Length: 606
Image (cartoon, rainbow, N blue to C red; front, side, top):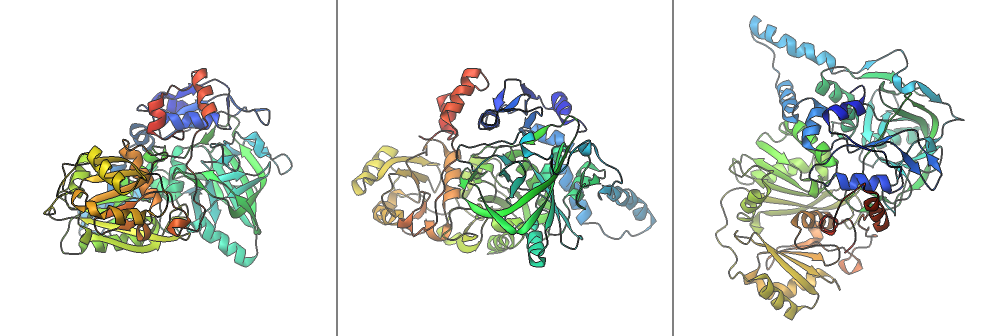
């Protein structure tokens, strides 16, 4: 990993694009398309430009590094399950009994010396070129603008290094960073994150907060930045554990924060706790724009780089994205850390079209009534799991959690409205569906145990069911039923929304012998024949306390909300590509997609 580009050429089937492309929209659009293809590859853009600013950058842009599962496994050097086994062994270490047991433990303990970062007393490769405060200029960096409605260009793969006021704790986080001008960045550390907690300390003390942002180097650095480590633990400990070697850190030039010696770009500065600036909007990994909101500002003191730096970036929006594979590794590696709080947890899966925090599937060994609900509350009460909005639990006899069709059938055959738990709790900073920010509905489904006794009383064809619905309401424009072979077919309808859908659900109650589970979506930008994206839409759009009804059948309102629903916040828009940019990239031969691909992943409105 000393030369990531060369490593990707040899091990990752790196695709090199030599066509001059704009950092505003063009390069991000190429990466956004690539990650959705069947044979997704990492991308190197050798000639990034900024037409609006008249800049030709001498720094290539590297994207889609975690392009697929196979490459992600190569980056880690082993399957994430093997790393998890090591963590599990460590968590279960007991004092050895007898001389032989003590000898056997020595290699395990000796290996732990590699976990702790090593602080070096000299400058790193990342400090070969130094731009002091007068020379520091963020326009030297090929910072991307991904979406047309973004508030500006954003650093999307920034490793944000911070430390507590007393210097006792250091944190590595992955936060988006909006470029305001040549010397200022918006710090989008969300309210629940460690860096935000450190900021609160500096704010109370009335002191400026030092921050160092690193870009590039070993891809494992940025993965560590998004890993859900326990509060107070420095994420670079995880790097040492995975790599089985010490992370080598060097001191920032203008503050006391240590960073990896081999990153490509370093941005150092201070955050004045008295200064806030509007950040956003930004098309985020939820597939929606996060709206304008005040955040702290980093004032740049110095920028350093390698002699020949490479600018790493990622693209976010609708799934699937690069975070699909980063999240897969996180999910596997952190399984042993969840088991102490839920010993009967066998496995879990956070599907990428559930945007990770919006949907979790868990397999447990059930030992008594209410066991699934007990674990639901455990999940909702700890760390980043507390942000999960919807949790579905199955027993140990269920199919593997990634066998989506078989698992869906298993769940639907056990779907019982009496085993649905709706409650309230903390939700992610990016969640847009709740009535108020940070607090919203939670849904837990206990699909353990035996199948339900009765299915739909009288199953109708899609066409006949649509006809009956349109006799009741002309707002219904489409019907598609899924999993009709199960006890609980999923009836999805699209509507031209004219008011609260709770009224429509009540009217459709006369069809209860034909429906057990009803899901409602807007007609606009939803294809009833694309279940992958329908799941993405629904879990994003619902607050269980408001949008889930259990009588006369289970009904879910997955439409966009407005004042008719009692929703007073601003509802954000979808992330959509710019048609002219896609057309231009097609003409240049940089991408090759058709109308079906564009519609399948919601690249453009329809």
